[in-house]
Length: 323
Ligand SMILES: [Mn+2]
Image (tube, rainbow, N blue to C red):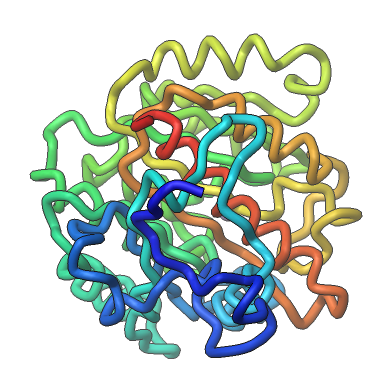
């Protein structure tokens, strides 16, 4: 084993089931070794679910994912890269939340995230929480990169488009993070790809906003009938541009990820989702999130366990890009 930039307790000395839980056993930000600075990625939780339009419970996602992630290891066979050798990783704790207000929570999370690690270097990985929280991490990521005028590219895995203008009169919900991010110039819709979308929808009109803005939609059915090439061509279009990756666990079939609040039946198997993530090799990631894990609906914890491995695969993409 080479010298690791992320110093983990040796699992053959200190068991994975012992000690205080952090994401993937990465050190708490106050415990990062001085020679492991600057930190490459800071993972943090946003335990919040007031943005949901259906079943709540994702506020318990970060804790469940921390617990499930104790068994995540370091070396990716598929990429031949040791994530902890290449990257300095940390668990920065949880952003402050205001459980009765979506907007106040998003503002508080942006304020927290803007100061994590080295703002010019450390990339932010938010763990939700419902999908409304993605807006906060996208905004903090964009601002830390100097608020580029063209916005960031976006790779979006989801059952749903999440471009609804308002729900019950509210602009800030888990159905709306991308319409708000596009309006604010944080995300460039012409370099946005939504992968895994499936229906039924409320109406045909639900597709209008994304289509009119030039968002590329690759539905689950598109992908199943030969969509690897479409994903590859979307990624070619994004090229080496700075890209944010958002992963809503409900893009995975509830047969594999039952612990989520707005279920979309059908969809990727766990294996398909992991393979698709690995296929993004070459993408220039500057921030990411994984959202919508609702542990109370999944007593076997397979959804949180999958989310923990989604985190690993996303970090592996960045590790392989640097090594
Ligand atoms: Mn979503």
